[in-house]
Structure formats: C-alpha cells, structure tokens
View 1 (cartoon, rainbow, N blue to C red):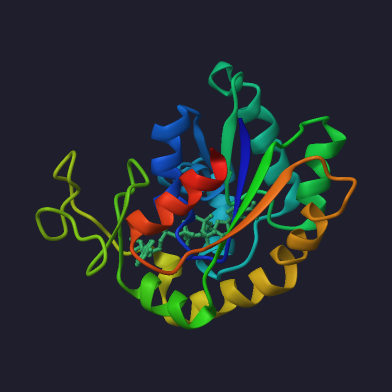
View 2 (tube, rainbow, N blue to C red):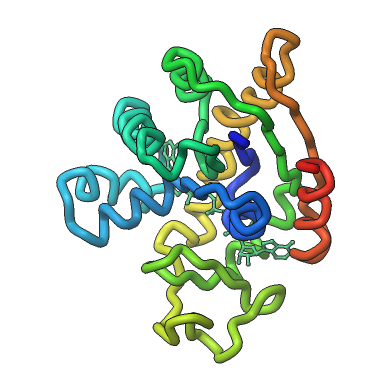
Length: 212
Ligand code: AP5
C-alpha cells in the first residue's frame, strides 16, 4: 500500500508512522529525517538545508523532489511506502503525478494548533533513529535516554516556540491546500481524516481502522 500521512508539525505523523510500519511492513519515508541525517553527516545537501530548517522554512522543491525520486526507487519500496512530511505543497504533490507515482490512501491526522505547541515543547528526539518521545505523553523508560540504544535524547533545533509558530503558518499556507487537492474526484486515492487528539494508542487504532 502507498500511503501519505498529512498533518501539521507535531500532529503525530512520526509517532504514528512507527505503528503503520509494523502493521503493513512498508518503509516510513520521512523527508525531515532524511534531511536531518544529511545535516548530521555534513553533506553538501545537509549544509544547504541546515539554516532553512532551523528557521522553520521549507527546503526547496527541487531538492526534496530529487530526494523522494531516488528513495522511491529503492527495492524496499516495491510493495509500498509511507510518506511522512512529503508532499508539503501542491508542486510536490504534482511531482508524484508527473512521475506516475500513484497513491492508495491519504490519511490526515487532524490536531488543532492549540495542542501543537504543547506537544512540540515536550518532544524528545533520538537523532540516529528518528524515534520520538514526549516528556509526559510518551516518556522514555529512562529519562532522556532512547529505549533501544540508551543514547541521549535531544530537543530538535526547530522546536523553539517562535520556529514552531512559523512552521504552523507555513502548514496552513502551503500544506493545507493538499486536503482539497486529494479530495478532488479525479484523484483515485482514498482520503481519510482522523482526529489526532487522544492517546497515542487511540490515534493508532483510528488509523488501523481506516487502513483495514
Ligand atoms: P519534519 O521532520 O517533517 O517536521 P514536521 O512535518 O514539522 O513534523 P514533526 O516531525 O515536527 O511532527 P510529527 O507530526 O512527526 O509529530 P511527532 O510524531 O514527532 O520536517 C522538519 C523540517 O524539514 C521542515 O520544517 C522543513 O524545513 C524540512 N522539510 C521536511 N520535509 C520537507 C518537504 N517535503 N519540503 C520542504 N521542506 C521539508 O509528535 C510530536 C510530539 O507529540 C512528540 O513528542 C510525540 O511524542 C507527541 N505525541 C504524538 N502523538 C501524541 C498524542 N496522541 N498525544 C500526546 N502527545 C503526542
């Protein structure tokens, strides 16, 4: 199955991707994680993306589309994939169509802006794996340590309040139009909107219900 997870920053896309990955055995492709890995490895691409991300802006479409094009050609995508953080605007969505990449299901995780700041301000992040925790809603077993590797958890640089506000503005301006785009009759994908409010398990159950 080919799935797009749509939702505001901090709505729980990364958290829910881990459940969908286990449920359907398809790879999670997070453009944010790919970019953070490039930054960590000090690559040319990472150096270009670093300032853009820390300011809460969007990396240019040509870079992102190229990343996705290459990633979707990998053998593990043959039976499907889960896109987390892509597409983020109409140009990116149309690039999938232009490359004849069809999508089976678009799942929107709806969370109002009031919840977002609280979620993101409590987020703890394991850079090597992309695993995400929340200080209250999903704490690690040992405080500030990743459950699997025991490595330290960090706060993402783009999670400062003023940056999150900018990311949310961009979500409303650029990403929200995708809701209408994927709901057009000529789109062949199924569209589901689920509430992202409730416990992580409750949200995962809602997603499992629409997938089945
Ligand atoms: P990216 O990493 O994609 O960030 P994002 O889309 O803003 O989403 P987040 O990772 O912040 O949130 P999430 O929805 O995954 O929530 P999470 O599960 O962590 O992108 C980062 C940057 O890269 C962008 O700003 C941009 O610069 C660049 N970029 C990436 N893709 C791009 C593209 N396509 N084009 C251009 N630029 C691009 O959850 C958040 C917190 O809430 C966690 O602490 C979690 O534990 C907690 N939580 C989750 N669910 C619940 C719940 N039900 N109840 C309580 N807490 C919960």
